[in-house]
Image 1 (cartoon, helix red, strand yellow):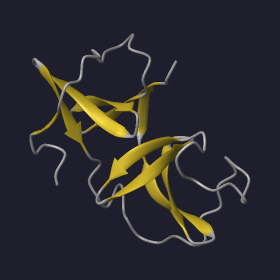
Image 2 (cartoon, one colour; image 1 turned 180 degrees about the horizontal axis):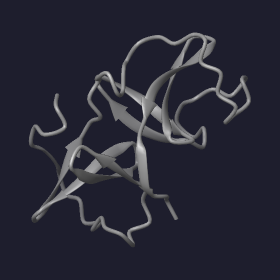
Image 3 (cartoon, one colour; image 1 turned 30 degrees about the vertical axis):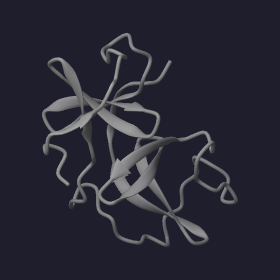
Image 4 (spheres, helix red, strand yellow; image 1 turned 180 degrees about the vertical axis):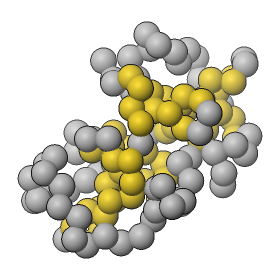
Length: 121
């Protein structure tokens, strides 16, 4: 699903914006907000669900030689790991120092950079 397909997040009372406390990332020509493993885009009277597309900028390939000094090599990404979940293509990656990590066996794949505009409070 493309980020611009119109998938609405039902019953979302929280208003995303500069002071909402969630991480904002640049996504194409707009900002999206990371919220509980979802990528939210305010759109009029509702919130759309977005996904970072698999592309040359954010590939979905295996990168077994990725050496990331951002965390201990024994760290395992998953719910509660301390990194924010980011929907990417048909899977979930984790935001680590401005790029997408994807747990893959005994290593993390580098699925490319994202531009963080606002860090979570």
